[in-house]
Amino acid sequence: MTQKKANWILATVSLAWGLSYLLMKLGVQGIPPFNMTALRCGIAFLVTALVFFPKIRKVDVKTLKYSAVCGALLCGLFTGLLYGLKSTTASSAGFLTSTTVIMVPILQAIITRKLPHSKIMLGVIVVSAGLLLLTSGDRFALDIGSVYCLVAALMYAIHIIVSNRFVREVDSLQLGIYQLGFAALFASVGMLAFEQPVLPSTPVHWVAVLGLALICSAYGFVMQSIAQRYTTPESVGFLFSLEPVFSAIFAFAFLNEIMGLQGYIGAGIILMGVFIANQPANSAGTRAQAHTG
Picture 1 (cartoon, rainbow, N blue to C red):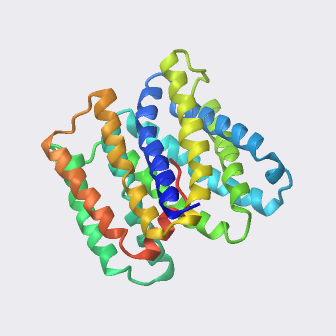
Picture 2 (cartoon, rainbow, N blue to C red; picture 1 turned 30 degrees about the horizontal axis):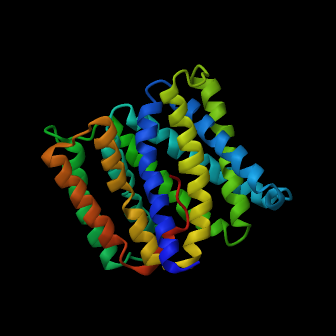
């Protein structure tokens, strides 16, 4: 595979993950968050497990243990986004989640007790200014939906860091597939504890669930792992940073979402900060190695 072809594939992956915010927004209107996460991850797990059954048939305890940790983080990430989307727009959710790109190096700096690269620190400042404009409105206070999305972004960052460590010790394909199964399991427990289990009742809800499972999770995970081997970390980081742009385009086209002048300025500043933070090769590489979509 050529680098150009790999970049095109990764662009479609980023497009799929941008689509996920629209699908989550449509689905959460009729399906509770834990319920939707269980359906999404459960279907994605079954499909990928069937496709790659010969490669995941034999699995050790260590892989299952690591998959359980990643699955718990995925469950929290997806569920947090869905709760956030109940009271914020798909466009804003996409840009809020993109702040993961600066959370990862900050968390790594805390773990290693070393100051992050100067470009990361500049990115943090720029993104913080964008967040203030995007989420505050006229009240200069974060709404609850934005808080849920930022918590989801934090869990996403933790997922990237731990999975980056785990793939050095276990098979990455097995980890990627089994984490979906555990995410579905944990979400099912939350669904039974806090919600009334339901199945999609309308064509729109079925499209949302199946789209999230097959396009955003199954396709996204598999094609990312294949294509990113044939391109540079810088290219991967840049292409994945386009995810919130795609989410805003889909939200505008299908949900008629308009963030307003202040919102668009804030989103643009966030995107600029993300691009700044993506400049160091090590940051982009970490960002590329795990994505949830």
